[in-house]
View 1 (cartoon, one colour):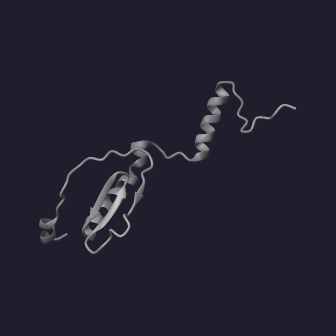
View 2: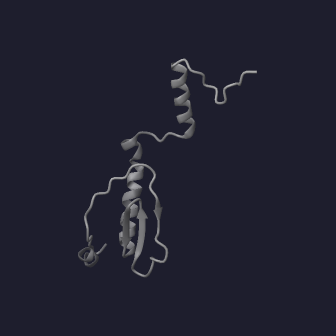
View 3: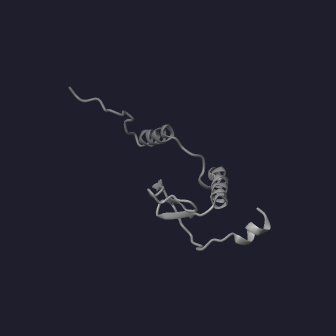
Length: 104
């Protein structure tokens, strides 16, 4: 970014948004127009007015994604979740049958 663009860079509002769990995402219909790209992430509405702003957001989010294991631990898949639940049931002496047999 050259000095001219650096002087023109702005952020009109500084805020903190805390997110937990899967977020609804979207782009408001009909709202994309030249110089205006709105993106909804949870209850936050991000409006990008130029490509440099969008690139900056993508850059920091991609960097954050690389640090996710450090911040939150390794991602667990559905098999891990089922295995953990079955281990807990076994340790409590409960059956691990998914569909318990029915008496005759």
